[in-house]
Image (cartoon, rainbow, N blue to C red):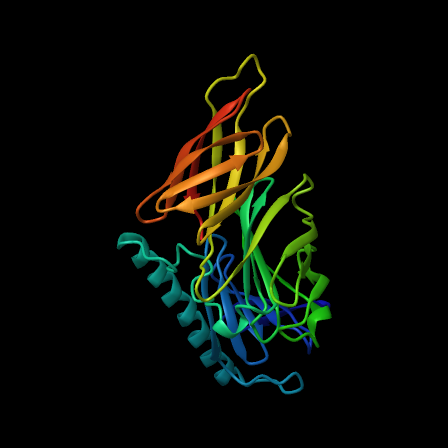
Length: 319
């Protein structure tokens, strides 16, 4: 995203990554809070645990060649910091009230797929990260396509990546190994068909996570929301040391599901499932079983049984 510049302004220290062609990231005095800015509009407000908002609102006119007066700068800082604090207040209130889908418990809340992209390559894509546990989201209906990802177990900060190669891309055109990169050095390569079919993370590189990472991705449409779950598979028996615990992460959408697992032994694989009512029939590796989706769709649990090993699977929705 270009050479980073650190600018110290009246209300605190803001680390600013700026180029004329890509959005910027501001680190606010509130610890670890970031705002992704494109031109004079705020695209997203980040916090390590939650993506606090995805919105567009003008904050101030900015010129690379003209310095702002201290009086106007103080107003800007005060107004911007107030926005962030209001978001934190809203986040705290949501925890004490009844949970709602697409609230701050859902990091993708507010990123609603456009119906016009349902059968095109544009739109929203969501998926799981299995190495530790985490998620990612690709937005191909934003002014400039971006990808965000976050490790949620153990918890990490939200990271944002941009794809300069998609500058002239338009929805309805196929994408082949588009590279998304971020200031952390993270890289994702993404492909999808012209009609939105066969989305794929071709490869990825996460500097802070040298171990292998496995993904499962789906296209979200205006009529088919994607829910992402993370959890574990606890072996019902060690079977002489042959069976152990595993990380299990899946997504569900409509009547289908897909996911990946990584066992403590290093064994890994993928799985698919079908949904009928609140029952998920799943096959993960050599094990299969019926899992139950809670009435509020926040948890999935059940047992997958195999010839050698069986696992009690417990999953919690992360967005």
